[in-house]
Image (tube, rainbow, N blue to C red; front, side, top):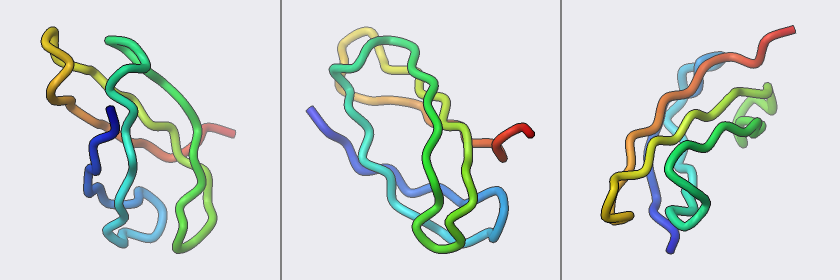
Length: 63
């Protein structure tokens, strides 16, 4: 099940929409490029125990 989440890119500060796969596990960490500035960011996802919602935190990709 996918959920759309609006976040702010940590590099260009533009609001972007991410599609989060709630069936991907309780704790997810992956890299994704910003669709506006193309800079990489690390996405941290915590899925609720009932797999109906999530908390998303993003940060700039470490060099």
